[in-house]
Length: 135
Picture 1: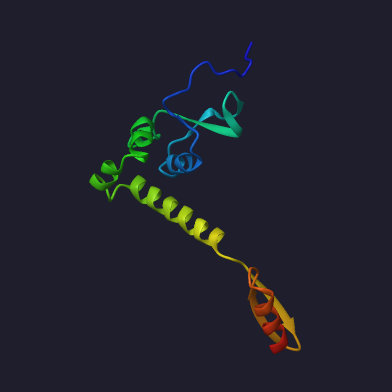
Picture 2: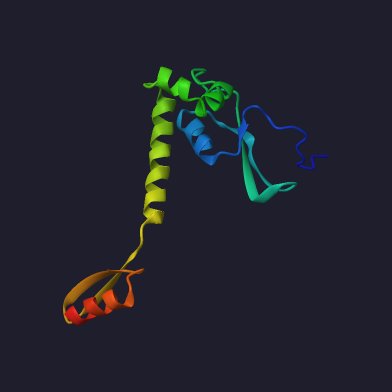
């Protein structure tokens, strides 16, 4: 009887979805049971555990090696032209760009009498009133 329980965690598994995306980008296939959703026992909220085959079908990329390389700055410095290094860099840059956008204050677009003003949502009332008078 298959209860779906996991008694150990595979060395070809990760909870890092960016790492999981990078592994699939170099062609490493997900396992037959590709993921589990985990809750409880110190896990805050819900966590996804991704499971992978041991290597890419061509044999060029080994899952354990790339999982170890993911957090190893020395590996990335020693292998700057490796496809996995490029993928990690792109995903890291994406994360930084998303964080930057989240930190910025949105602008309210106000249209009046054929004019448009962009007013920061955190602008003091005095500034908002000044913009509204100009429209």
